[in-house]
Length: 139
Image (tube, rainbow, N blue to C red; front, side):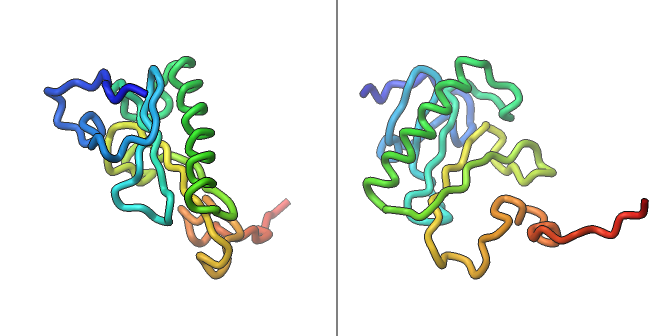
């Protein structure tokens, strides 16, 4: 696997300059890297080689390569960490929590007991809506 990428050396973006020792795999349009500040053991990121801000800007070819690396991340994580589940997602725009404005897709391994109540999963981005509670609807 080649570690050569198509990143622009003049762009100060953090993800446009990945650390070679963090690269786990790559394909034509993206890299799979270890997260520098992992939420859990094995936390990985898929980052496009092209500097784009959100998922909504990716091409079909890029999206296919992102999926291939998400599946590669699962193989890697299961070999090294043996998780019990996964959360996969990305933050698009500041209001959604994006802090590095270069698209990156999180693959977060989950382990039984890592939180008291995992029900709701990614719904925890809005804690008061994380649990499935009937709403009072007027009809």
